Length: 381
Image 1 (cartoon, one colour):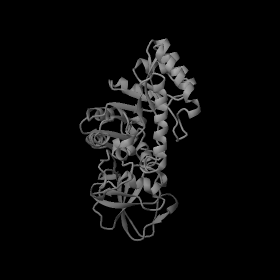
Image 2 (cartoon, rainbow, N blue to C red):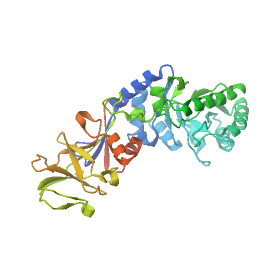
Image 3 (cartoon, rainbow, N blue to C red):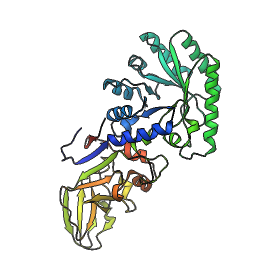
Image 4 (cartoon, rainbow, N blue to C red):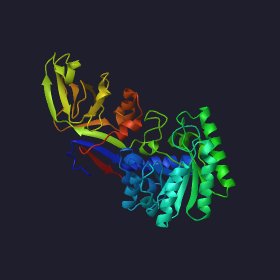
């Protein structure tokens, strides 16, 4: 959706920031291709506009979780190489193959279902075989790898599939010197070599955002940055120390301003009471819009109104929260309130929210959702 400037709650998506971040990642990746991950509706930023911006800025692949996410990109006219990597047995593999979507496979049973779709559609499957190298999540265990490779090689020989890549995912990439990174890379290389021994010629990919920026030895043929595409630093560096630019600004407009005397409780449970006469501003955004209720549990949430950092007081509610603007504040109904953004001038950031909630900024960005949040896209696609 676009906005005329009267949005109640608005997530502004800066595609120029996305393009900048892809440039940083492509430079770091050197000779490896860049697969921009746009799953979960582009981490809450909008998969289609982010995908277009990423491709125009130098990414050559796109990555998503589900077939439905892949088909949304194809329906938008995006034709770039596209990998979908997490499926259930009765997913519509035929639709994916018809739309030229690469599929990740992690078991013989999964492979059989994809090959059945390939034979029924007459469209050979393009497969990325996933090996579990130590995350113990998705991926074939080492003991099952040989049988999976044998089945895939047989299917490749009869024209039912092409094995495009062997891949895996890192468990500790945000700690660049953690010993598991080298171990996982070695296991991936062993699995990749086993595929080559069967006459296959797959690519390798392992590196996520953090490894793209810090471990060039793990880049292999393709890197798969996700959170860094959106300017949220995978190494948790402050915004003024990171080469990345946050692409989302969450903002709202003040709905009400009023003077309140000393001694008045604010919001449910009266967890905060005015210590003196003050001006309160009501911001019409709450946990139904992606502002977590527990965010202000310690009274440290802040927003920027009129270019000044101001504390949120009392509990965050489903639709609204209250800001203490002080006794002499020049704040008016309709003024803009920045909940988080790029941190310019010391403004609030998604990383600060994550720190307060003891979570990661991924959860903050993807949590901005719902029909009441207007998404406004700015910058060049």
